[in-house]
Length: 54
Image (tube, rainbow, N blue to C red; front, side):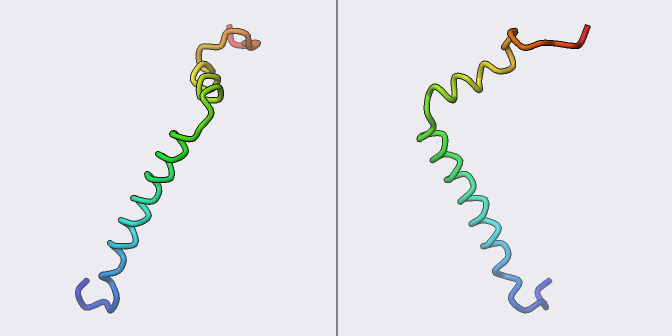
């Protein structure tokens, strides 16, 4: 791998993508509306939906 020119930039790019993804996710969680978070968190427990499974 050392013989490939410019290969040293790929770990830096992948680290930046990883870091930026989690910073963006953190920002979304902080700025999300609390009503939306509550609604989405209750979806798996919602029994008002029509279930066709026996």
